[in-house]
Length: 181
Image (tube, rainbow, N blue to C red; front, side, top):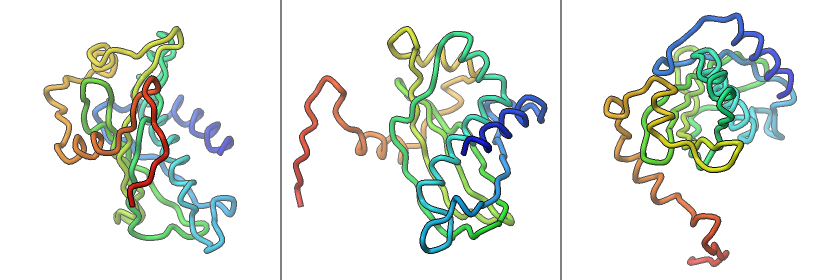
């Protein structure tokens, strides 16, 4: 993954510029180190590659340097992914990443794994932005930094419902491991 990050950093610095509201398309290839025992891309690798897709979106749109300058950084709060087809060794594929909405605490990105125009997997990621000095970046400030008008990026209702249902208690609240089967 480290070498992919280095390559992505070079590509982002010299590659095509995009707007934060654009779909970032990032090309990858399935390497032998990405495979599981069934000889297709491991489910966990999808999540790591999604990180790179979001970094590419932020870097090529110019948002990443602005975040770093202010001491802000993103953290994934939750994610969900649906797999449709397997990615096999040596296949090239594109990760499409796009901001799909904001709520009062987080931003949401849809990411798709695409090969030959077909969606192989689709994910939704909820991310919050934190300050290195402590605390959370206010969403109005984040929207301004990304050049987004929250009114033009309403969160789809089903994503809001998923986010609410998937949420865990805050760090200040107990979260006992009890099963209700």
